[in-house]
Amino acid sequence: MFLLKTWNFPAKTNMAIDVILAEVTNQPLLRLYTWARPTLSLGRHQKRVQLNVQYMKEVGIECVVRPTGGRAVLHWDELTYAFMVPSSHELAKKNLEDFHRMISERIFSALRKLDLPVEIEPRKRSIIKSPACFESPSMYEITLNGKKLVGSAQMRTKDFVLEHGSILLRTHVEEYARCLNLEAVILKDSFVGLEEVKEVSLEDLSEKLIESFGELFGPIECFTLNRELLNRVYEREVQFACPVS
Image (cartoon, rainbow, N blue to C red; front, side, top):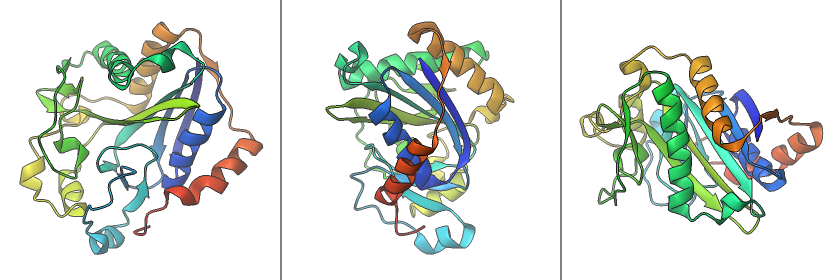
């Protein structure tokens, strides 16, 4: 399994990296990353959401459109992950649900290694029409004290399967709600950050995730973003731009 860690990249760059890596990798690849600035990401089909553009510009929250589906996520204090496999790999034969369950189980295992009382909720079908990912239940939900902790989305093409998502350290409920013109009180009981329960460093969380994924996908080989790949990334960034940025 390949591993790549990238810290504090711009929003459009992060999204382009995920897609480029998925296009070129010839084996499972796990990427762990953070964001240069607070960023609201929208699902690729989320076209009717009404954003509080003025507020976002005033406080410096960027906006980006993800290559995956799903609903809006505020990336701030979190660890973001992306896991991808080429279509030629046996894992790509798993359907959406089984692929997601496989990843959820790896994240669940990592969090349990940190002595966090997380649970995996059974499959849920969302009846909530909120534009916010963390107000919407999903299949094989990872929860902490009964609240959503991880938000994820998936992309499938004839060449690869990509799933990425966010593991929250802090929730930033007020800011998340204002970006989406929602009342904070509606969101505050829906999701939770790890640091609200236990002090967890980004380094410790990363280490346990790498260990957990390595247990299933084999020896870890560090992946390097060379100049050629970075040039491809920069060429694709515009594809994920959002008018707010």
